[in-house]
Image (cartoon, rainbow, N blue to C red; front, side, top):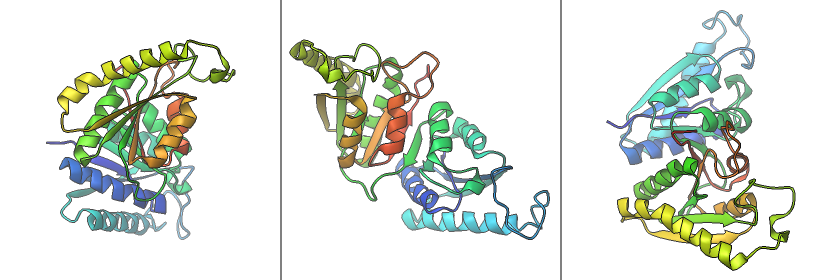
Length: 293
């Protein structure tokens, strides 16, 4: 049986959008949707009427029940026959959702949220889960109702192999094409984004372009054999990595990236490119951590 899709719920418009996206993800997978609401001090904003150590008197029960009921209604509007469960936990959402990720097939969060939930703010929850979660993490952001191919940020690193597999799986589930984008520059073999503009360095551009194209084909070949149903477009461009990927996300249904890639420092759990995509992409972003991440 497929592990559940978990979504963090705080009642904000962003989290309700995440609930709808998570419901569709669960429906595609034939999985249960698990609505998780967490609260904890000191970040929560308690309603008036009682002390924080007395949740019943403080009106928290009614507030939480209403929040989860609204979320479940939103989920069933998107996928009427979906199996839905609810979970309420006392604790910081970062830790609660990280624990949930151990038994989930996917964790979904919005890009903004309410402070009393510990903030389903991308700066905290989304980035933390992308770095520490034990399953893929989907951050719902960008333009509404995105269309286009699944966009794979492909760098050929060992840590990025999980992202390649996730991108093919997501394209297959959606019946969508896959655009595998590999961005290179004169510093592709070294640091990810140097202070010197990479396009200003004199290199044998034709040789490097051909090398990158071969590397992309080698990365994709085994996955194309596993997923012959997925139509794949390969694209290799010479540019700065982050701007190129963010621009391409404007015509994508979903952007899939690895947690770390080439140029990442050992021990750095979430690379600068992945963080930039989580903050600035024009479509939802899924981050997959490799087994060694």
